[in-house]
Image (tube, rainbow, N blue to C red; front, side, top):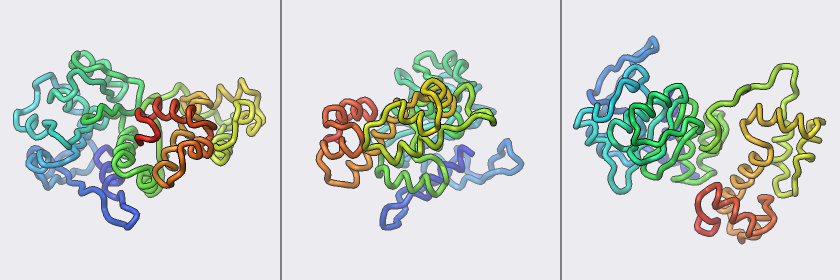
Amino acid sequence: MELGLVHQLLGTARSPSGDALYDVRTCAPRPGRIRTDADFPIYAEHGLDVVAAADTVIVPASHESDEDLEPGGLSAELVSALALREGRRVASICTGAFILAAAGLLDGRRATTHWLSAERFARRFPEVTVDADVLYVDEGEVLTSAGEAAGIDLCLHLIRSDHGSAVAAEAARRTVVPPHREGGQSQYVQRPLPEPQLTSTGAARAWALSHLSEPLTLADLAAVESMSVRTFSRRFREETGLTPMRWLTQRRVDRARELLESTDHTIDRVATESGFGTGASLRQHFAAGVGVSPGAY
């Protein structure tokens, strides 16, 4: 899955004119047939020379061997192929973070991996600040993601960073996955699906997305589901891992990004149409969520 999702997302990402935006190649230290833990092998045609030349390197997981790695446990040839240089980035999916750490790429950085492996990762690589509660971490030239499905979020984040929200959303639609989950979202929630007898809060989320430009309160959202505010808030968090208002703020930031990329609206108009009301409010929430001002973005 970790290998296939990279090809599915980056490999099918297209420009508005239909041109492929990435040339995705599968590499191995020794090209050829590679055993997997499924009932089929894979064939990697390319070697470390292609890794060394790539602008983006994504290391998927090999659970059987990753977690046995110690600092300095990689061959000098592989470390050299993964080395950072200007204009390149290296990312990992799931326990692929062990590879990046063993190569020394995560020393002094924040990183994540699958929550089941996080404790071992922290023990093996004390120079790395491990955050086991998030989907992915973007440290600029080095990125890490949590379990397999979080690799989808990481790939969409890469596409969105390179080519904008519209291109990432189209890649997500092709794969039938959500176009955007914040990297800081929890890897898992205590009850990821509502109990069968409980009413979902999905209708409220859909309604909110079509009314983002309007002032929305917690009571407004709860009323859509005919729930009390307390019950709605509890069920919303059970289903999404977020509070309703934090989720709403994230969606408004998404809308602001879309408007900034696809229109020539003023900051104040973007603020109004995304539901922040004022330019000052937009700037505050946008900087907190994206890391730069709307104008810089």
